[in-house]
Length: 309
Ligand SMILES: [Zn+2]
Image (tube, rainbow, N blue to C red):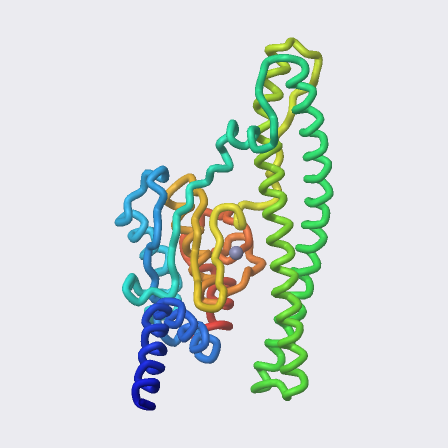
């Protein structure tokens, strides 16, 4: 009877391994990449593309090939491979519904009527949100400046110890703690950025309606201005996310094929383990603002730090 139980147990293990084979594969890759980064090409697949983008899978693939080629060319080896069956990184195109003004206003409990009551309700909400936006923006700027400063200090220490051939155990432990603190600061910054984005979307949705009401109701009010400029587009356009057993790149918006390739290159860079660099023209700069379509020397230095090219 014992062998029946043993067989049933092994069958259960096999079934679980089969059911969870995708996250297990990603987890195995993540563990291996920690020890030997960039040593095997990252297999990626395209999981979903919202049809509202009006972009075909083959066009996305062409763009990804160009985007990842920037890193592979610089490293003189293949760092990524399109292999949907064994993908450890999935790419999604999620249509950005933030622009849908009507739905946004509705979600804020605002109705759009060309009357004074509707105008006043919206104006009150606008004032509350702009005040919140300003407070959050100030907190974001402070947190980001601190993060940049501490991140640079951390990197300097790592470089010093690397040059010496490695750090003693206690220093290594301390550096790991610093890295963990930096990661949590970065998560906090992203939370603030999400809140800024959400507030900006609501404010901008209101601005166009408020300006329309001012003219229709013939009110003596100054023009309302939209917000959002100055917080950068990097976090807004796309994001790379990594959790045990799951890695993904999600693209939310892009306005030209050149910018799409750039943002993909940036996020695939994060997938390799690259951090942001200070060079404003670099692909790994925190904002997607340059038109440069190849890796800058700062990008290559960062690639070298992670991949030892
Ligand atoms: Zn980034």
